Image (tube, rainbow, N blue to C red; front, side, top):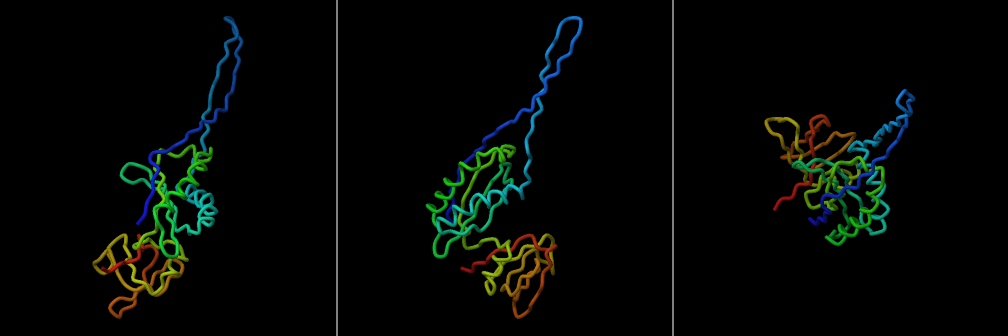
Length: 195
């Protein structure tokens, strides 16, 4: 898997809405300045949606497909990860090129409220995570690994052939048995690679 990261980047703009209050009194006309700091807070979901919108035209121009965008805290540090894919081979040059194209746009005011983070652009890899309906559609008939929030039939992991995906329900076939798993039980679904 190829990965290119720009470490600990953050541009912070603080917008001041200042209000001046003048009070007249015996001892003169003191001037008070009260500054209200206004920062628009974005949720992780909003960050991902906006970064997707910014990145997609660049990815299309490069001939790669956006696979996923995540903004998560990993080991005490925030990571903004853009995952890409291409028919054939995605390499470090693809990751670097997209990173350098998107990076200046992340300095816009709308991202000013984000905590310090590392920007990573990476290839989807062999054990890519399946999250969107189009991911599941592309890999019907492939072997996948489903991780659960709590054990089901004594295990937190099920491996089998992906048969269907509909409204979050995942159907696997393993050892001649077909099982449907509910969205509320599924923590993650990844492609499974047997070596």
